Length: 177
Image 1 (spheres, rainbow, N blue to C red):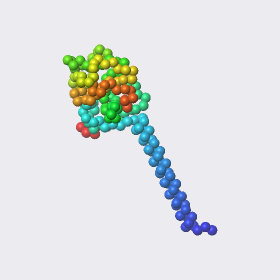
Image 2 (cartoon, helix red, strand yellow):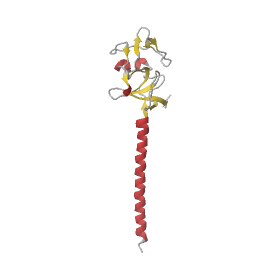
Image 3 (cartoon, rainbow, N blue to C red):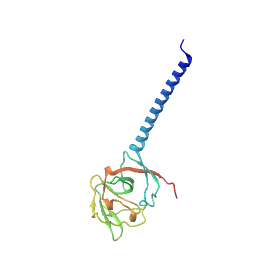
């Protein structure tokens, strides 16, 4: 008859080994789900600066949907700049549209018509480096911050491609007043 103490020790070792594998498997599955959710389906960004005031403020945490997006004028998007920096900006013109800025009136013109923008409180003025009018290509978008005086946007770096749009805003959390 085998020693019961040795049998108990062996059973304990097997249980520990099984629980380690179960823990490792759970950790791998959890990491995969987190990556899928927040690396593929959703994106999270913390708003930096005040270029999107009044809609978004510095330190707001924004949740973006990355897949299956159709963008419209007025959508807030996560934009990846050419240098790897991500900005939160509003889409103001879609592929194929013509964008112009009337520096005398401070109006943004899309296809020759002033764009109705109830979310801004100041005029839109051009910046050096981009000539107007500009007609967007088939996968180009024109993006601007809501606080136009203090925004690095398409007036600085030109239109952005569809590949540079990294998601559409679903909702945001505001931690501070």
